[in-house]
Length: 80
Image 1 (cartoon, rainbow, N blue to C red):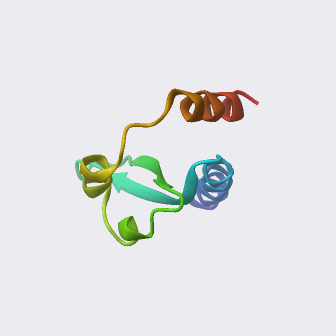
Image 2: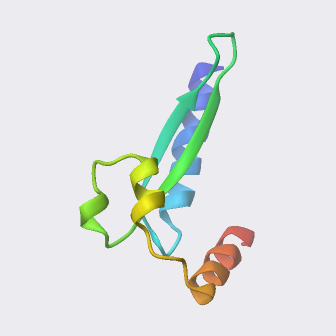
């Protein structure tokens, strides 16, 4: 099952990185110490080198508001 999970994570990461506004996909795994995991996939904004190496909390505080047109492009890309 771990091997299958790895393949799924690679595929989801590739899909996230195909979005027009994403530079890289970061994966976070959070759990409470139990026997299950909670993986999260975060798309780091493209063309914002100053956020490279930082965590999601930095992104939220420093990112400009997403223009409606860009948000619609992402939704369209995800729905494909």
